[in-house]
Image 1: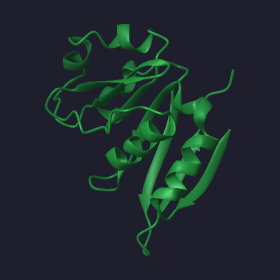
Image 2: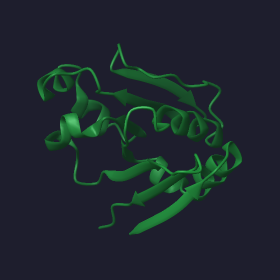
Image 3: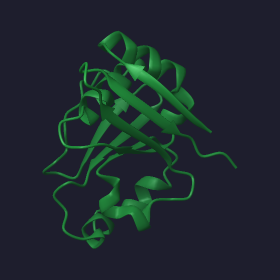
Image 4: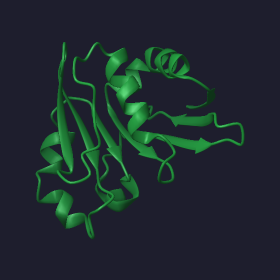
Length: 140
């Protein structure tokens, strides 16, 4: 299923996050240009899931782990990797098949490694500084 939403504020992100909670509890590939707000979106998602961690970009560590009331949430940023083997070296499959949420920035760097059940979110900056958010959820 594909849904499109215009996000114009932090409140909009929080509402969107609550409305799309089921997808956020899975594997989500977050697509968008540099500076479009991928990490900002993830910070709002953490709040909507009652996570005490504020969130930050794991650009240099590749993965951040956040604790939530429902267990770990994994946040990946593959911007700096040069090949998919670097992602595999951190035990990527273990994260993906842990049953915990996995949110992935720059998923195109590891596209062939993404599980079939990955949801895809595309964020595009609009001329009025809002964001067009397109979510394609995986459905069996």
